[in-house]
Length: 181
Length: 266
Image 1 (tube, rainbow over the protein chains, first blue to last red):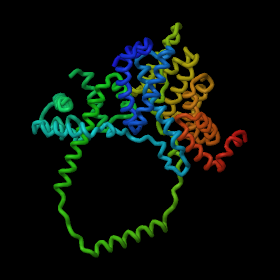
Image 2 (cartoon, chains in turn orange, brown):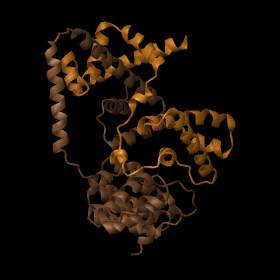
Image 3 (spheres, one colour):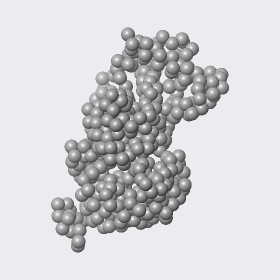
Image 4 (tube, rainbow over the protein chains, first blue to last red):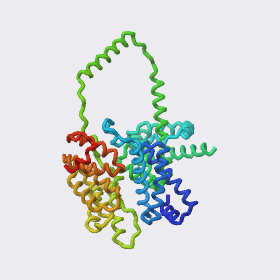
């Protein structure tokens, strides 16, 4: 993602380019809010939209232009917008559990999509038995160091990473192929 | 696979397995923003892990589905035991007091750090201050807190103009807070508040974390005032500020929260 292209598109009001780039940025922000803050899809969409409008203004005012600053600004603004809306919706009371302030863990499960899971399951089952057993072992033993996995399968650590990467690539291609039909 | 690509995939693997620190997660999301396709890889790994876990639990459940019939009297005995236990708990239960710690920020996350906003300025001085703030952020998320601190001190010494002075002092306050130097962080937040001109976010952060630091050193009255300031700014810290304020009011004997404003001068 080239953020300098984004800045240029905002400054020159290039609507076609903006439509493409904002949909990419918006998708990242929505996932960020869902995973990191446990936002619902609708709330995440609203905050992502508010954030993009604020970023547009900042860029037009010449107050934001470096890629790193834009990324930082996007995440921070999205987070603040979401939390502010949530705080307004739900006024706390003293009886409420004080841990409501504590940080909850990331909601990675919010990335799961039922349709894609069904396809992925079919792809996983179509893997060769040795590859399926390898990837199952990898994810079934999350606490194991890669060296333990490598030892278990009698390969080097670097080959262990390569093999995992190769299997993920195969699964990704399989899913894309099935989704295309 | 290139080394950089491999490193990012290692980070994604660790993220899915819950092995990343808060700073590492923040840094990884910056990578996702730079390369959104990596989010597809994250999604794929999360989905595979979910499917494999489901499959494994399904196998475990089906392999252990032998059922045993317990004699009828067992259920009566179990019910009696539960009733006894409930009676025992009600008799000896002591209400546990809410601890102040539960309302405090234990560690301030790196996404609260102020960075340069890339203002296009004619003066060279502004560009340098921006870069120093951004370098401080990079140092911090890489775990180099001392380096981050010295970069923020450099901004304070050489570029103490707005908005850089208040940003640098806010960041210094955050770093010192996380190091447990609460007195140092209070001083830094006060300096940020003295300087800040336009940023409501900095005002809010400085009041809120100053309040937290004051609680940590036992200065509850002063903490109450700082937290109230954060609360009245009505921003992202409103909810935690409200809860901490209620706790402080309760502990200090100010039971009538509505009357708080009139008590501030007393």
